[in-house]
Amino acid sequence: MKDKHRIIKNLTSLAFGHFLVFTAFDSLSNLQSTVNESEGVGVASQSVIYICFTISSFFLPTYLIKRFGCKKTLLISVFSVCPYVAANMHPTWGTLMPSAVLSGLAFGPLWAARSTYVNELSFQYSKFTKASISVINAWFFGIYSFFHENAEIWGNVLSYFVLKENNNGTEAAVPEETLLQCGVNFCGKSPEIVNPNLTPPSDNQWFTLTGIYLGFIILAGFVIMFFMDPLEGNSTEEEDNKDERKKTKLSANLLVATLKHMKNRDQLLLIPLSFYCGLADGFYNSDFTKVSS
Image (cartoon, rainbow, N blue to C red; front, top):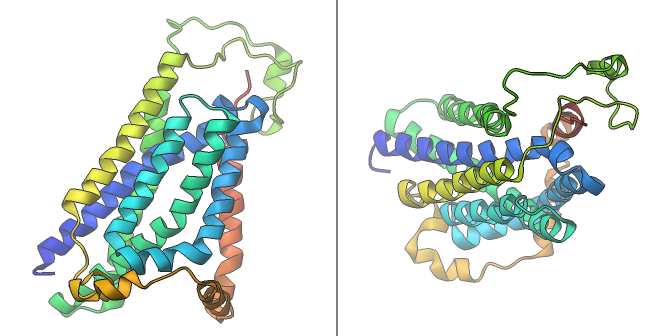
């Protein structure tokens, strides 16, 4: 990196690209249990994504980063999410499941390449400024997390306005039985519980929303492609190591190395927190956001 301004430019480009991807993906995930509730295909596709995400995290990140470098790995991963978003325009088992597998496999390398890239930027910036690398690392990941946490907020705001029903201020009376099943008492769809004010979004609204989300992910790919620089000082990115990268192969050694690392005390302490976050996300994305008409 020639100067700190380029480092900041790379960081903000990566963070903004991530913001675009997860504005689309997180908001779409929150709608699966409601909009795609037929036969449970929406929630099932989310389950497939995270199962494949877990599997890919064992094998693919190290291979792809060594083989292609962080920037190309990010590009491959981002564009691999596009089919899942596009499949939501015609959500069936035949369209959502294969695209969910592809998206899940992409997320492992996506998160690993993202962390590797931010870590390297932190190292380069600390050398330039003579500041503590731990301080810079915390600062850079804080900036990145700001974009990540905002993604779901703005994605949900967008879906609200696109899917909002224009009822001209008129609302039908809600039966007492329905009111008693709202909030904490809501336990899913029931034939006795009917809310006349809830209607599914029109096809035009849904196509508009998924089209916007698809555009966001494509735009994210172009942001990464044109505004992010390949890492300098990283052997996986240097021209003189092309032959070494070509020799990189998928190996069971990657799985063994990952399992060995799980013996680390700090890693063992983090695993329960990861499970908790996963369970909380599953509840929030599927049960908390579910609406039945």
